[in-house]
Image 1: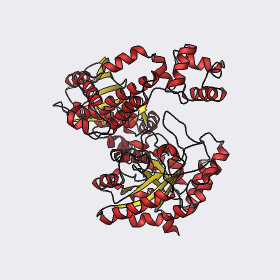
Image 2: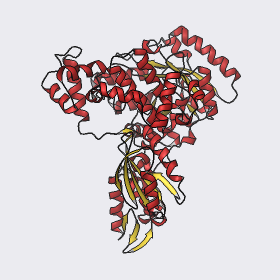
Image 3: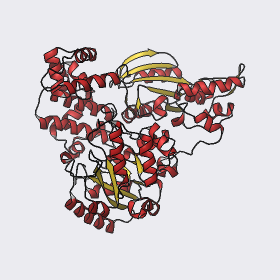
Image 4: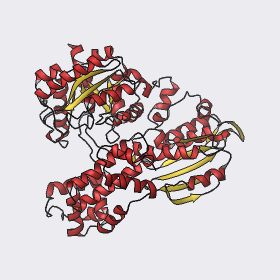
Length: 571
């Protein structure tokens, strides 16, 4: 069972307990356990009771619950809670602005049982009269419902990876399966996916299909044939299987990777050459002239290889034809990580533990960037605590051999654009990140000026997760990207592509636009634990979708070259 599935069930328990107004510490215990399991680099389902007890926050009760999920695929406590808590209340929690108390109020007071019912109540003005709501909350809910209405249900790509990669391992274990890969939007690196497309190369279609539908996580078989099948997993994620022979596998992988718009454009190029291109191969009349490799498709229309992340019909075909496609940044190019947090603020591992983990990953440098005082809820550091941390960083660097730790801070940008730390302390740091954690709803012009003022500060090096969005939860700040990116380029300030799966901020389109305006980007994990340092892969994929080459990314540089980009180097 994937860690993501165990974490999903534990998180669902936390939500239902919160809706039941259960003890706050109990709710937090399940929520924290879900996060710990989700981040775990090893399969939780295979761990011994002793190893489970070693995990932070996992006591006897939670270890037993995890073991129950691993053994049975479900949890008695969760079934009991579902009988007590209205399903509609859980669904309402997905709407930004609606927490557990508001969800229960909507269900108990107005009898709301669906999103459609919520929309009707909001539009008729019934919400603002409820305790804990008001006109502003009602307006926000109407706005959020309008933005997300009609959207298909999608999950984070990083979450889908846990389900998909476990399934790949299961399918590859079948004798006769020569290759198996995930295609579709997952392979293109989109930040969320609606379903998964699984392609298998084999001549044993019936056996492959049979094994697929018998996967232990399958809860419903939607379709089944000798070369194709479709299932729904326990998580609700749909997976579609196609089995292809060797002579068609490359063309099939290309076809099912998409995007649809990209495929149509390439097929038209083929038609102009008298060719037919589909999932079975490249044909001249009835004669197959290619299909074993994806490259066969590109060769047929006179194009070089186009990486999957670029196949969105956003100019990649024209750029490829002119030989102007960038050589995209790769995970192996990353020399360091420029944003992470320790237990000094809201991190879950110590400064030393984060450095040790980074050293194990082979990094040359990292930046410790704990929060500033404005974020009291996360124990932000003041001047005195940053100076103490600086001394600890210096002592740590004195004994490290292969890694350099930069002393930094993630500094809040106040509503007026001023920074939440005094200039003297800012100047003493090796690296300064600035970010938005409040006032996301400022008008666009005001938000733009706020960020511009921060960029102009001489100590600032990076604007971290620039919009502050949380995928599926918060849209983030609206500002004039062209002005912000232009100012960043002029002042030598980097913009971050945050690798947290819930952020991936900048998004791909904004990343590409910023690079085109001359901005250097930084890909950072924003890790709050040593295990989250592995999230770098998601940030690299997002930057690749943003057409980023190695030279566009600050932390592909050796330390000496990186320091020239930072505020001390500029002085």
